[in-house]
Image (cartoon, helix red, strand yellow):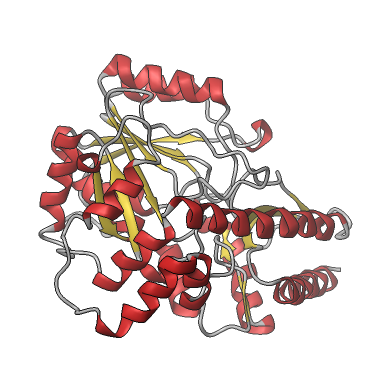
Amino acid sequence: MTAFFPFEMERWQSTHEHRVRFNLSESGVHPLSTRELLAMAGEEGRAVEEAFLDIRHVYGQSNGSDLLRERIAALYPGAGPDSVLVTVGGAEANFVTLWRLLEEGSDWAAILPTYMQIPGMVRNLGGTLHEIHLQEEERWQPDPDDVRRAFEAGARALLITNPGNPTGIRVDPERRAAIAAHAEHHGAWIVADEVYSGAEADGVTTPSFHGTASRVVVTQSLSKAYGLPGLRVGWAVANPELADDLWSRTDYTTITPSTLSDRLATVALEPTVRSRILTRTREIIAANRERMAQWVAEQDDRFSYHPPDAGAIAFLRYRGTTPSGEVAERLRVEESVLVVPGAQFGVEGTIRVGFGPPRDELDAGLARVEALFHRMENERA
């Protein structure tokens, strides 16, 4: 029987994030409330609010309502509503994509570190994972030659997260083009998790892998760039035939997105509202990214990192040899602060710190992180 690989990061966060004073483990910005979302929508939002209590909790259109899929498709040039599957979070989009593409071969490649859902599931389902490791000294950029070698070794699909998690780094355009060319040459799939697209500090949207090769699936959600993780709305964009295949698999999982979530997601992705949401997100990220850089500079070389291009995340390498799991546990117990230990991404000696909370909470949480590291240094002295 195949050994089961637990999803350590998700279990760590879900167990503790509501039991600490300062949650710096989240990688999105401070979430929007329903009231704030509808206020951004103006007249449409007021109409939805007026109708809210009368919305019947029926089963919705199981691949997403027509208008929601139209609004998602409009984000990807050349895509139509029949190219879109709406899912319960990006996690379901990733899962059904993996399920379908395993039929074409159990060898997968993954660019690491990354969100570990698909790598864990490949192993749990008996597949072979070809690991492609980003190099910290190369600013966490992938080497296209490593991707080519993974395809030559038999990988039938490649997972790439762009912008990256936990790094927040965008793939350089020439490397992105080379990766797409290698996939095209080998007839392999690219599965591009683009959940941080739209959360760029410089306001420039990261180009999608959609359309770069003939076999591409893009997954996204409202959780990170949109500040709406509780709606649990995600999507997959692929060619219409594959999108239909993915839809047939959600018949076995969640059946349909929540009726309320579908309606609110449709509001959020109306072009004017979407622009307002992303402006809010980018303003929070740009300001807190600057604060994060200032705080790191104040730490007397205690930490080093590459400032992220997107996402409210800083992947910090810390001075010393204390295992990251121990660091994270001590922060949780002694300081009531939650961060993600780098070991859960396969990169020891690091922690992922989310800087998306309101500024007062961020400053207070960082002060507690500083206090623990100061205490650990005194213990070693």
